Image (cartoon, rainbow, N blue to C red):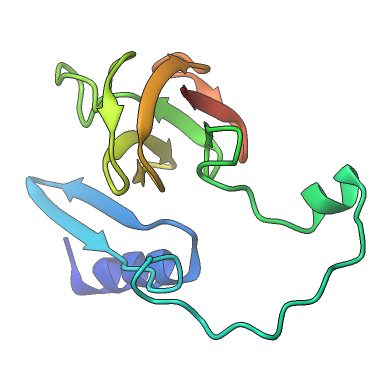
Length: 149
């Protein structure tokens, strides 16, 4: 893999919501991991004094917020469009199974878009209740794919 391609992959990860990317070409693998310090519990941005926000309709709320990986309803949504993969590679065991207890930061699944593989990690712990998408299924941005108890 040439240096220009690696630089483009790094730029892609930096400009997107992708937190981890692994690309293999001609037997060479490159793994790029971005640490998002704004979502880490150890790094908090300063907050303004608390005020009560004006009530918003559900439509305004959805239109003005990015698609969360894990929402308050304990649903894990696809962070982008692509193919949903439960395992890291064909023939490998899935990252998680129904009934598994998961912890924050644990790998849950992969979304593949244009041969770019994005690993999705849990934002908090819980127990896997069910999968809402089938392995290999095309999913859309924000589509629920996994539910926690």
